[in-house]
Length: 112
Image (cartoon, helix red, strand yellow):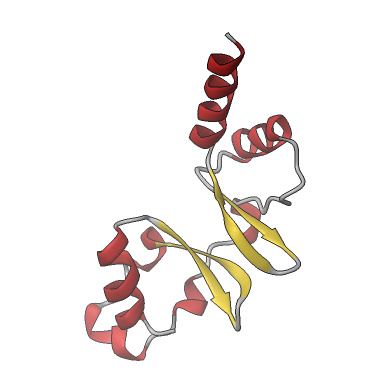
């Protein structure tokens, strides 16, 4: 995918800073909009986003079977704001520490 549809269809539409990148339906990585800010808008029509994928060592990929406490530990240890949840190459979603905190409070409220 080139920058023009990526920025127009995703960045400017959803206003997120991090996006998953899929190729033929399979998760291939994450792109952080901060990594593309040095690319001139004049080059957007001919520049592909693949060269700007985040370094995989800077984020964690979570297995959907991971325990919530382990997922939170992984996210906080990696200092990741979001962790893609991937099974057999398919992106299932993203998990954030705030999602997990909400789950803890929900369980606490139900148990009270």
